[in-house]
Image (cartoon, rainbow, N blue to C red):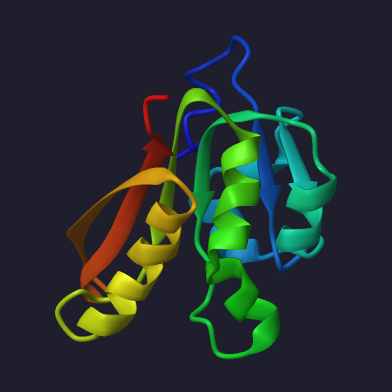
Length: 145
């Protein structure tokens, strides 16, 4: 598995924000894809990075831990999603992992609501994840203006 980087030899690039500098078993699992020169690792607060960044992206994948404190909770606000929208290219999409829509229904919808209040179209869905069971996600895109 190479996260698609080798298949897209052209202009495909990945910018990732990661909490851990190295993880040997994950690195082996993805074929050392994060070592590609097409990958730029950002290791900083996601909220502050979005505030300072001027880059735009065709796709943004958001996979944060649950909002258990202020530092993480601010990543689930309409303010954060507005910042993320500013980094999303026209016609781009973002996906946010949420929680189980079956077990934590209220938490699932508390992710959808700030995305919509930031002016984005939100399409919730769920998929089976072997280690978690049914897991929720939200695809967000700009609404036609």
